[in-house]
Image (tube, rainbow, N blue to C red; front, side, top):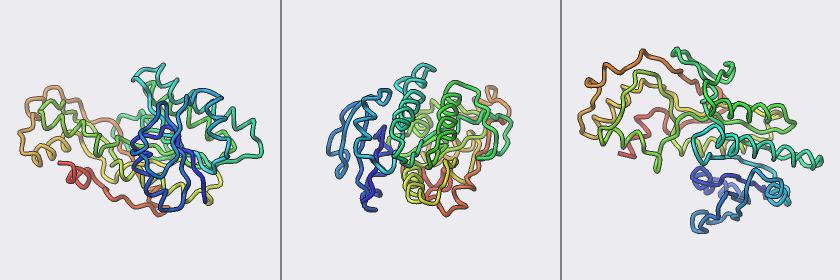
Length: 280
């Protein structure tokens, strides 16, 4: 039976758990605070601070074959990102260096915020990341540590995740509080992220190195178009015309998912229209 340690075991971990159990994985879910047992039936739950050597020594005592990191910050600040992302990755690699006979596969959920491009261009895994803020800079620093390590696995650069419990945009349209932006946006359904994680874990024996994948749906869309479509589905009047004066020229980036599809992954929700239909 394959063993897997999931650090930052929250929404994505719970979505992914049934798939992993069906495939015969023995899953340990670790997080800052104790989780309710009924939220993760079939997994062993534990808690601890991923910044500390002590927590990692405890979690790695049984040498799980795979480690998944879905970390979250406690605030949207540079300090919180350093504490919540970079320090745990640094500590993990420090502890692993003390265990030379142990070579787990490592999977890190990163973000497309590593791309700071803002001219509407297409970007992919071969595009040089140029983050334009502390979140992207921190994610890129974590990625570089893993890419420079000796461990195999995958880095998943996820675009804006939506789905049950992640309905901020949908609710902003419903309540007419949305601020329309004339720029390209990229998004991915949480269930497809969960499926992509399992897909790449199952491919781990094929990956000789740490691979990078963009996890995003197949149809980048202008924010104004998404707002208009959602408003139509909800039967509300969008405020697009009223906000035309505040719209900036089309910018941001369009992210390609060709690499993950080229190795056999298929999206259940290839566009926002597919994904939001079940949420409205």
